[in-house]
Image 1 (cartoon, one colour):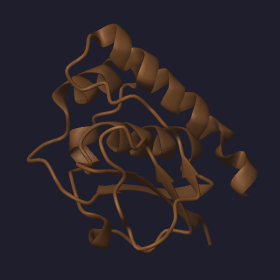
Image 2 (image 1 turned 180 degrees about the horizontal axis):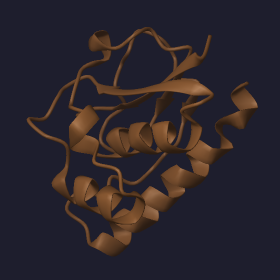
Image 3 (image 1 turned 90 degrees about the vertical axis):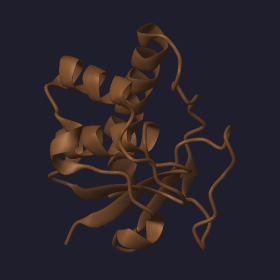
Image 4 (image 1 turned 90 degrees about the horizontal axis):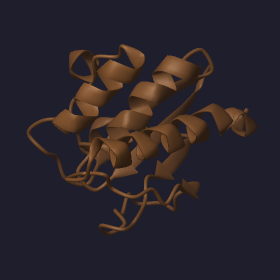
Length: 129
């Protein structure tokens, strides 16, 4: 049975959604990936949607939506995307804090830098199995 990895942000609209999409894309054969937040947004960040589609051909809006932590299976591994906007409380400690800048409102260049950092970290998850 695959371990469940959850990527957590406050609003579950950008970094955690990117991580879920890239996790499924690069390592979906090893883990089940989810993203969640302590709050939600009406839609996934549209810059993230556009750039993930452009860079990887992944349409996040087809299979993902903003959801709270209580709406996903209990994770084996919980990863915070970064607490620069306030660290969410999920009832347990995080296994890791990736300390990623929230690219919301920034240029495509900044978004792509964050996306590539998430890709690198997702590909490095092999130490968990």
